[in-house]
Image 1 (cartoon, rainbow, N blue to C red):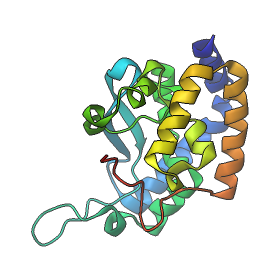
Image 2: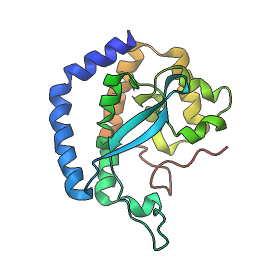
Image 3: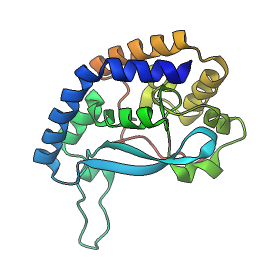
Length: 194
């Protein structure tokens, strides 16, 4: 039922997000150049790694030593605006169509985090990861990792189509208000390193 719900929502709303996807792609090209997309392996359901696709929001700037600069140094005002509006996440709808992701579920994190999870935290991989989820509407990047994982596991144990609909509507509200986009003093989320 959840998979069918995802497909119906994505396909029915295609006339809305399709043109927006093209406009954002053009803006990314004008402001950041090529490539348009950021691709990264992320663990999905059962920890199976898939290629997450997002719009690129950072430059590839490197220091004099050839190393990539920090997120703070590479995140441009345009990139900040993309993240603040969550428009960088639009290409993840392709991941939803492919079945790698769901509209709602625990956010897919880094592969490097897999061995760092406690047994309880690892339960977040019992469902498909989502573009949004309970942790996103409860505080996004402004909450602790422990809180995020508690909400993720709560979702795993209690998810329903009704809950997904509620989370989607609250997500739209949170994005419009630009709440919890980043952790204090961080350009993005803090690294999970228990």
